[in-house]
Image 1 (cartoon, helix red, strand yellow):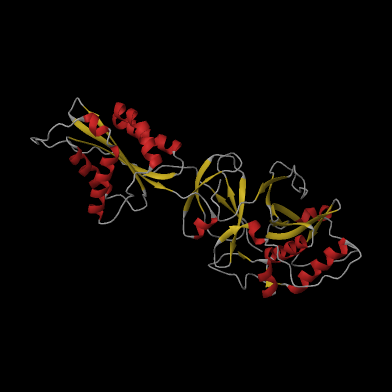
Image 2 (cartoon, one colour):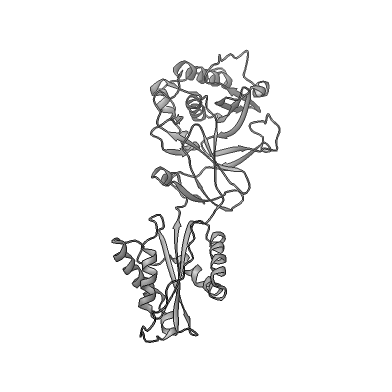
Length: 398
């Protein structure tokens, strides 16, 4: 892999597109009977349903769900007192609070309107909401009384609520997502840009990565661990005099089988796609991460403690390789240009200056480099590496 690593940086949440708007009161001379304020305030759901019916008529489609966004509705009810006390300035404060308190909301727009009857108020809100962009998929209203003016008021908020992050949601076309950092627990909203190489999900608050992804054939993403499926080639490994000889035999078999090539089978939309072990074995070609995945999967199947490492060479080129921990020693197995020799074992300590690791993964976990550690970390050092256990791609991020 001669391509740079990329990092998915999650943007800190930011509400955008707010519109504070005062609706018209009862027209001059309009003879609308004053209503029982207490009765109306108790019937928030009826007002919402009536308004959504009018929005659907104006927009010629079922613009918003029949039921109000439950979380937004509860939040709006609890926040509305401050809005009414402070006027438009408090409205801006309210929406800033929405930014902080409902982190799954990517953007929002709001309307404050007044009228002399529930019907007129509903019509005013519906006219405003029917013009909202389709990206807004959540809606809630809260009506309140202004006895001094004999009017009803309503605060309406429409939001763009994002899906909780999962690889499946991204593969289904979601451009933005909501996630919570598995390290500091703080919520984030971000996007994934498909580009070359491995992709790490990085928290903008604690500045640490906590997920590692790869692009598969066809352009979909998956967690890096899922590339190690437990597959081993249909090859009989002969009885060896030692486990080291067995490791060298499997290493040599991969080098002999796989010809280095740059994504001849997997190139898709300029992505550096990663192959499963069985795909690489079948194609007989692949680049460094493909052959490293094949080697690691095979070694793990044979009982070795092996990992795939993603990083750079001492020349600054993006690269992947395999490491094995055995009897207290660590070996670096290069899969693009090497000659296995039991008389010249590839000790990782001796090769450290040539390899700059950034991520490691096996079938169960991903290991992220602790930036405070030395430049050439030991691969199995718990001080050098932070371990995060894998989550299945179909599962939402916790």
